[in-house]
Amino acid sequence: MRVLHVIETLDFGGAEKVVVDLVAATKGRCQPAVCCVKHSGELAQRLGDGVQVFSLGKSEGNDLTVPWRLARLVREQGFDVMHSHLWGVYLESALAARLAGVPLVHTVHGNYQDYGRRFIPRLKLALRHRLERFAARWHQRIVTVSHSIQSYVVENIGIDARRVETVHNGIDERLELKGERRGTTFITVGRMAAVKNHAMMIRAFARVAAARPDSRLQLVGDGPDRPALEALAASLGIAARVEFLGFRNDVAELLAAADVFLMSSHYEGVSIAILEAMRAGLPVVGTQVGGIPETVLQGESGLLVPDGDEAAFADAMLTLLQDASRRTVLGRAAAQRQREAFSLESAAQRYLQLYAGGLQ
Image 1: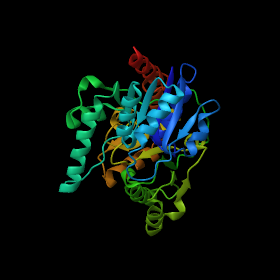
Image 2 (image 1 turned 90 degrees about the vertical axis):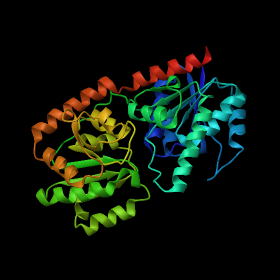
Image 3 (image 1 turned 60 degrees about the horizontal axis):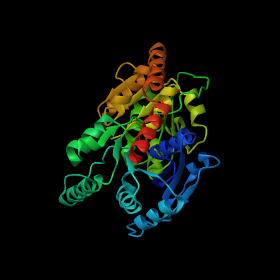
């Protein structure tokens, strides 16, 4: 069975890492390949030998040739199933699968952004939902990575509930790394964009740093907000204590040496970054949005606060920083929950069942 994953790029990101991990987990049981509609990206190097990567070279904006070129690729290469990821390729993949006559699975990886309440943004969202409802008929299954997203897809978009199911993201739980933890290091991993709300995190850390001058914050990742965030840290007088590490290939090692993981997003699905932190035995301080409460159990594997509540976020950070025994208890529970509820093998098995079901 040949499976073609379709995504815009394999640049650094959570959904992109899911694709890479799914390919690795399933390539012994099917023949996966990846088509990047725009360009491949740095994560393509992690796919390993024997995995084909195609690129259609789509530029920004609409390109009406993409569905036909994608359908031709599917037919010429003999793919049996398509698996698309993220809204950016939803419509093109649906039309291509229809043209090529193959079953299609689509994964919705994240919560829908807030389009705002003004007329034009609301009109854009309504049009998007109409297109999603129309194209849903061409999908074997629409998968959401959290129950909160599943509810939105069914209740707000209006897609038939019988076509939708949740498959939680998973990661390989076999990775074990030991690091020297000092009891003073907060860490976060993610793209520096407005949705991640790093600015609130940095302001909360400034409050913590006033009480604990030995504490430090590490931010792994990059993005359009980085210059503004660096300026914010400088304006708060904590630039020497906030480390902007950029994209790294040693994230597992950094997590193993940190003490508390932070996630301040306005919305999330099931965050791969959180799962990797849980695997490393880190307690999580996060916001109560999207799939985060499904991932991190309040008071058991982390502490969750309302979205945007800087004071509550800082209080949770300081609570864990000052209580080593509680960090240990929550961290152990986080690692156990990741192993039991968010394994890569469980996710891979379900996707393989969906692929096979589409061929019956």
